[in-house]
Image (cartoon, rainbow, N blue to C red; front, side, top):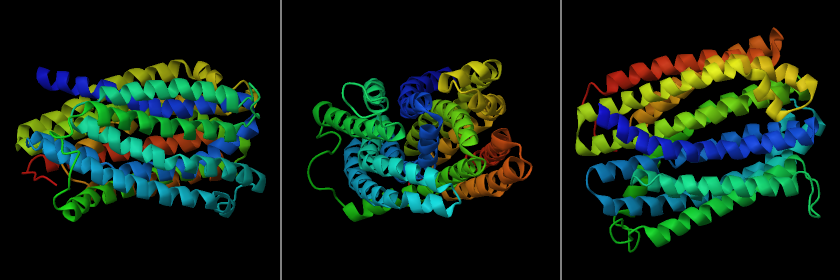
Length: 442
């Protein structure tokens, strides 16, 4: 047990910092845009709803990189790992180009959802700028998944630290208009993030080219059975992309519900969701550790190792999430003040953060359980459970509590709590059942 805890932490902690860094980019954008103005934050927040949906679908489609690489490493087939990376890079570029093109329909989509035309127009401009960075983000994601799969998570963490420092400086220039730049508000924040995402890919890709053994990991030469490997990659990626899409579209719909209540509720709800998402990214460090370590155990044909890798990750993550939840509950006003100095927005955000404190544990735990099931290549049943939890529970509950009963943003967050609790219980039961039978490689 002690060895499992130590190895889980050694992988989870740098991955946690790297995942937190992704959301920290958004958190800094949100906070700095919020201090620029409520309308700019509303534009940014509404654009994030469809953008995050597309972003996480793409990341889900690429998760076969980590699963197949981890299973190959566990089976002692390192040469296949680099071949998996090269297949992933091809897919990442294609997914990025398609989703970037869809961003140009953002304003029309937001108008169809009933958003105020002025808010939809501003958010549509922000979304287009976000789209320019999607290919770079997906190429970076594929590269980092490969590095994590071969047990090298530290470079991704270092790249993310550098990215956040660059983003902070670019935001200062582009949001507020220093050093001769135009004050861009939400559009300036999106442009800074887009530039940073391409920088992230070049840094991570440069590390692979310069510091990873090309021969050992099969980074050169022809790829045997390319089409078969690509099919295996997509066979894992499609259900995970759908699962991410179901979860993210549900959360995006909740943001749209907030939009029906006005700019102040969008801003207040975005603050609470940004905080809970930041903690969820910490949990994804443990989810990645669970996925890689379960995948390694599958490659070794080690049933006990599969069970321990999954449950140890859930246990450590739960202890962390409970501690953060207590902090959220005690410091809701202080956390809200980081994002806004407008009394109306703070009055909505602070009680929403209080509700979010209770949602942290089930939200993070279900993410870790999904990671464990991903490592075991059990993806379609988990996708159905996501559909049930997020669309069967979150959406109707959120609409009733937030819009019909007029509890606003706190009511929407209560629906998040109910749905993530449902997902945690269902995925826990599924992982228990899966680990009672023999598991084959993908």
